[in-house]
Length: 526
Ligand code: MEZ
Image (tube, rainbow, N blue to C red; front, side, top):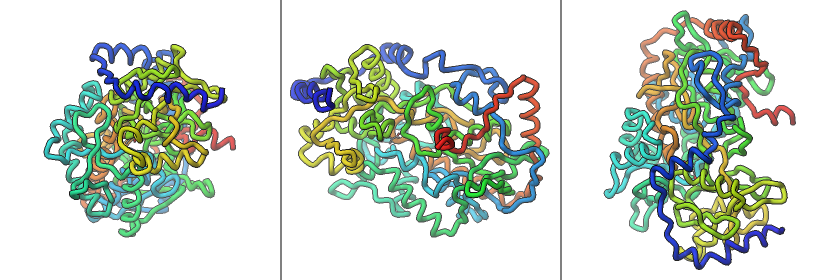
């Protein structure tokens, strides 16, 4: 059947659905749905990690292989440094740039190395906003409670408290740097409501919030003349005789040569893991999101948290094939867009938390109420034309210009036609355990942003990732930058790697996997 014919039930049921209010599921129903349909609960997707700090714990096969994989760095590599700095920042996304700027402001000599171009990151993929309690009707306490509930009460309370309390300061800093957040007619910051939140709390830049923030951060890194190495990927960390972090081995992707950097402290902000395509899921993540930081920190001895839980964003594009996995912002549901199955029925309150909504979409598809494309993908509809009816003609173009354009490029007009969606691998809920200053269990190894874990519990709320990057990027930069002034450079060794390799041999593990992955597997086959 042609896609237009498949869309008919959405058009024919729209008027009826407009009168409907769907109740939210009870806590018991939510738990049951998640256990039955959420990909985190597919037992066959998991196995215990064989060695290292998280030995015996379960994670997905793709990540376990990466953690147990072998470094490309030979044990006898000449460790004469090509660069010697106070702070080495790994990663050129939001957390990396924030850390670099704050370390620089603290008087440290900073080098920022990034595997692709400055700004290529999941930060730019965060479309729908950043949660900050900025209105009179809201408070950091309310933000704390919503986030805790969304995270199934598994969030680190100390980290969460800091994040919500420091939110307003982050908004001020970004405004000062020139981020053009949306405003109300009276000039106040305009806020929108996201899934799982009790109050409108998302500050936005239309549907390209992360892109706008990144534009400004990139400019500022350049303005401050912070040295940058682009197309240079971190492939190993360096340690001294006490196991503290003292720098990194990078690989110049232009000529494949190793680049040794001595640093008094390293801030790892290497981002997410979507390009591992866990359980075969498509992803909303950028091309470099291969979980490199997790593997590097792990063999240094840093413990990982909650690495058995991942976020599958409910609305990833299914059609056209070229967009498979691309994000369709939660903002569309926040503004009233219905999720509709192949029979024209709504099946979940669209503003429930992401894990619940995704579970319900998977349920609809598994139970035969989904819509199959010619390419064999399955999904349900997101009724975008409804927004024009409810909020007036021109709403989509005004509030979601990036989304309109994303589809227009393929001849699809989301003003008149709904879009087909299915959960897409979006975020790694867990990551490297950090303290309130973003320091991992390895001394002088700081971790910020998506590579870190604990803050979001088992399900992150929309918009909390952008705030996380800014708060903990700053904390890493300020602490590492401040500390570096009174600290000598430690010795550069690969002792941790020798120990890790020896443990792997002892456990009989020889996976043959090179780790970190650096670029997705399919990039290497191309
Ligand atoms: O925080 C996010 O994941 C986000 C803002 C995504 C979106 O749907 O726009």
